[in-house]
Length: 199
Ligand SMILES: Cc1cc2nc3c(=O)[nH]c(=O)nc-3n(C[C@H](O)[C@H](O)[C@H](O)COP(=O)(O)O)c2cc1C
Image (cartoon, rainbow, N blue to C red; front, top):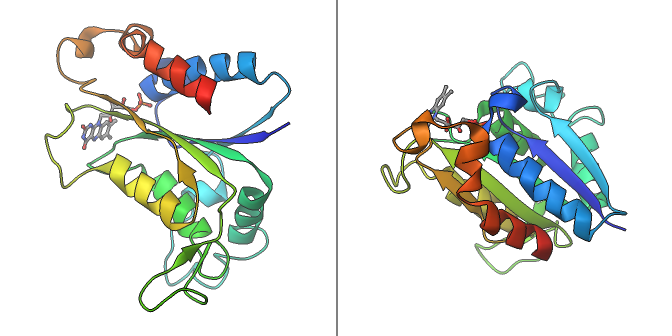
C-alpha cells in the first residue's frame, strides 16, 4: 500500500477549477488501479505551510517542528505526490512557492555534503511526483514564465522522480475559454487516465 500526498496549489474553488477537475479524473482512475492506497490532501489555502511567507520576521520559526520539519517528515513518509499547479502571474501560486520554501531545506531534502564539487544530491530519492498544471495562455507564449519547468526541476533537485508533467494550456483563450472545467478537461482525459495507470 502506498501513500499519496495531494498538494492543492489552486486558489480557485474546487467546482470551478480546471486543475481540480484534472486531479479528480486522475485520482478516480488511480483509485481503480490502487484501491488500497491512502490519499492525503493538503489544501495549501488553509495551512500555515501554504500561507506563511519567508520574511525577516518568520525566518526564526520557518523550519520548526510545527512548520517546515513537519512537512519535510511527511515527504519522507509518503511514496508519491500529486501536485495541482495552476499558473498565476507567470509562476506557481504563492502558496505552492511557500510550501516549497518550507520543504527545500539543505541537509534535509538535498545536500551538498557528499556531492562532487559544485553539485548537489537530492535526499527525497524514494518519492514519485506527478505534476498536473494549468495556464490561461497557450504553451510557449512566455517561455520565461514556465511554472512546469520550475516545479519539475525543483522536485528533481530534491531527488524525486518526476513523471511526465501534464499541462492543460490555453484555458483562457478560445475555444476552451467558454467551456466548463469538465468540458475543458475532457480534451485531455486519455492522457490523464494513462498517467494515472502508470503512477
Ligand atoms: C490571479 C490569476 C492570475 C493568472 N495569471 C496567469 C498567467 O500569468 N498566465 C496564464 O497563462 N494564466 C494565468 N491565469 C489563468 C490560470 O492559470 C487558469 O485560469 C487556471 O486554470 C486557474 O486555476 P485552476 O486550474 O484551479 O482553475 C491566471 C488566473 C488568475 C485567477
